[in-house]
Length: 443
Image (cartoon, rainbow, N blue to C red; front, side, top):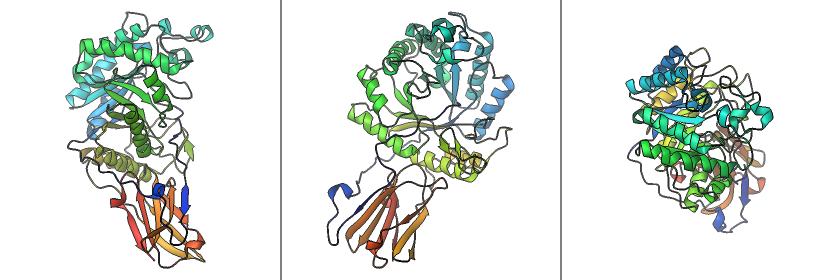
């Protein structure tokens, strides 16, 4: 969905370094942290965000989207359901929108896929928007008034129960709203966001479960990875009213997933993560930045999608990874299809990853070269997390640095001259993959 994406805040600097004195042992906080991960027995649900269900969707566009998602080997498709167009008047279901939803769900079921419905956009009749916005509110064309939460959470709950009853058998999950912590307020505007979101979630969850106890309900749909908003949700009583926590991370995706999971554990929350939006825009070199994210090349987009999905497939606490999105629009290039429908390099790469989730991931590479009195370490690595470079003299760790890749998944670091250029062992690894996947060179 078009949006200005929130920037990641994990609480770590982009580059951190430490230099140990000659013969000194490395400080405790400088040692790499070793963790044993349980090996997954099943892959995460893999899929793609497709066309939203509103007045702009047609039978032909729905059929095409589901056919392409099936060719992509998606197990799930995620679609936005605009409550405001589905129920423009209280208790009155719009036949055109419902027909579109019927078509998408039946198409997906016929191709062996299930649907994640994320339901947002408050109808004019229950929006809490200021009067000035309500005066121009239209049930047909979404506007600012639709981004304000409902005056009656019970009305939203009743609509979610209706969707559960009509489509539950073919749904992977019902997701309660979209990005309530998004700073641009495109989806959830107004004050007291955490309190008002929790009120909506606490109303929707029991209503859905009363209709279909086995249907997963997703809460959160949050973009912030530093845990600030999630902690507020816990304080307001969120726990116990969702089966999975939906998150959307575009910057340092793997690091963000790990960070929010640690916040979960610290708050006694072991529900699985549903990363149902992540991706890269292939807008380079035409553009440099799109939706606050660095543009990448089509080939880099392809590599990033495949590597990230396969990394997530190995995580025991991630239930789903759903890319954003199937097809480009006139304003953004996050799709695996171009705006006209042509397949980009990312289509084949992501299809391969979805079909073979435990396949190989691009390795970390390392090259060393001398330049004057300094040593330059350069190479490439899979995207998504911080990397750590370590320099040893014998068995003594003399220097370490935490860094991120550039938009081409490459790095180049000039090491401090005091280290010298001889008799050194250099090691580089990605935190998510661990030391076992490190690249190492001696000079």
